[in-house]
Image (cartoon, rainbow, N blue to C red):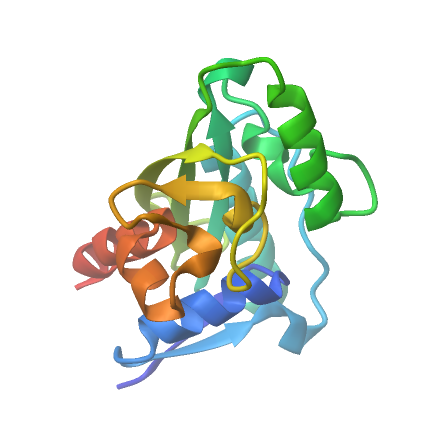
Amino acid sequence: MTRKIVLASNNQGKLKEFFQILAPLDIELVAQSAFNIPDAEEPYPSFVENALTKARHASRLTGLPALADDSGICVNALGGAPGVLSARYAGAPKSDLRNNQKLVADLAGYADKSAYYYCVLVYVRSEHDPQPVIADGIWSGEILDTPRGENGFGYDPHFWIASAGKTVAELSSEQKNQLSHRGQALKVLVEKLK
């Protein structure tokens, strides 16, 4: 029996990744935009609190189980910033280009350019689910000053993966889904949901 789950995101890049990774499973994933649900507020300092808030918000407004992601890039030299503010690092309106420009400028003068993408996924069976299913993943790399590649979104053109010899934006979507923080978290979540 196919499970219908609302995906608590309006981010087109994330939606594409989720649909690709979850396609083989018996899950009908429906974006919250199909229900005209606006993005939830993300007032918390941690990824897990924000993801839980987004999942409960989507479940409350649809009556369906919900899956939410909160993810971002954490740069060691910047004390973990941009962190939960990754999508809004350069302020409103959201802009990948301005976020990347600010990150590169903020890292100027630092020798340590190490960073990691972090993703936490929260699945709730209902708005008041007392035992949400939580999974996370980390993907380490470093920040390049000059963007490379045309794929992906967000900080991908600046995020260098030494083991691949490429930025994330130079990877195919299949490679990214295998290696990424979101791909790792989804694999853990799928095992937990089984």
